[in-house]
Amino acid sequence: MPAIKFKTLDVRQMLEQGIEPFPEIRAKVDALVPGTGLVVVAPFMPAPLIEKLRSEGFSSTVERRRDGAWETHFWRDQSASTAARSR
Image (spheres, rainbow, N blue to C red):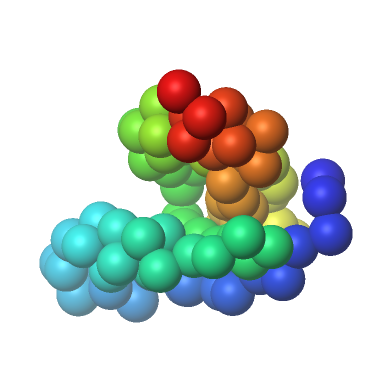
């Protein structure tokens, strides 16, 4: 993984309260600048989110935490975004 500064968004409490976290995740992802990324902490592996952001040029890694939650790191693949801008 490249050297990136990550901010963390833990969506577990939102989900427990019945709040859909995607709008908050979307806002955080849209605010990312080069060299930054987002860590999403969830009670399950967010496969649909991973696929959605992958289709938008984001890379990700996923790992299971000791507390049972899933931690997914998202960052924009610089080579993909550079290629998209040069088209």
